[in-house]
Length: 475
Picture 1 (cartoon, helix red, strand yellow):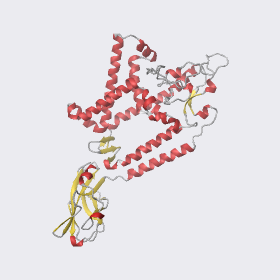
Picture 2 (cartoon, one colour):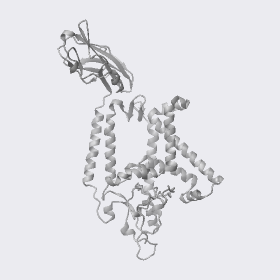
Picture 3 (cartoon, helix red, strand yellow):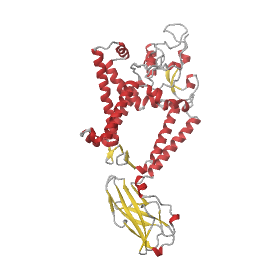
Picture 4 (cartoon, helix red, strand yellow):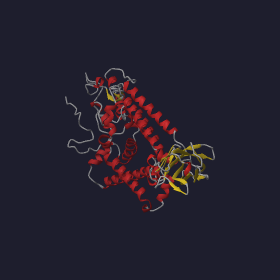
């Protein structure tokens, strides 16, 4: 009896060269569900830049103006710390799902899998035919017909890559901005044009040639699978007790597996699931549908290859509630709570005050003067007018020039104003803190800056605000 080579890769030839895989098409309940899910994800990817929310696309990463819009939530650069909680929350969610169901993310919702299996390989099947026809075409000599097929297929690959790249670019420049760029010469927008060409070349190379090697070699998530899962994780598994020993139908003493290798033929990464869970398995369930189809034709019970844990495949009972899951659940809720709290702290107005470059204070004709810059950012999608005033334990004679008149800031705009605060030198005793209150004239809501220090004579070493205006503007 031949022992399967458990260390070989299905997508690599014996000499180490890349093997071109031609997975056969398959039908079944999981395949239909995956196609519906892929269709939904593709629709979402295409539609998000078209859907307006509060006057902006649903997802618009406006790098040029340093504004980031997510489903009506607008973040300035200073608010991007909230993204840390979003990313960590998504990471904990992925840990949670992996601990429960293995690499189901890879096979069902990963963008790379969606584009490869449901876009590019669909184009290939349309042009070159089924798996057997594609293998015959690979082995055939270069004739006019083969050249024509290859040319049409790769032209469609390039056009598809161009479309995907342009949609991706629209997330950063908006559809309106993208259309405006397309009406001008590439020289007018070289950075955006270069990004689009780079993305197109990357997509074309990945999906026309590199393909499943990205999942096997480059994707770090697949290598984390063994650390995130355990014997109770639900994976794609082969029931050896029922299937072994393999043999033809009607043969005495053999299991249900007839060694048709249909599960291998449909695998997008070229593995034999009967050798157990492997690094290359993306949990797509193509082998499940393929095997169930054969079992039904032979009037045998489906499920020889199925979603099950290692414990269940060996006759035990899967435990969904276990320490690992409890821990990951805690991390998941912690991430969600942290993101919700962080998002609730975001205000539609932001104000910063920083001392101007130069001396921390000036004295002229008995008047002590401190010079500041105040930056006001209006995150709303409409212009707002704000009035400014000083707050805190203010000494007598304190006055502000630059904070006495209302300030109108356009939608998604900002204003940088000099702020001169003065007082009689004789009234100054020691450095003190004060803040600027900004009141929205429309809704009456008041926002207050962080306290900053007013400095004076003999207080230079006590001041901790000696950052210059250039550093402030770079923040």
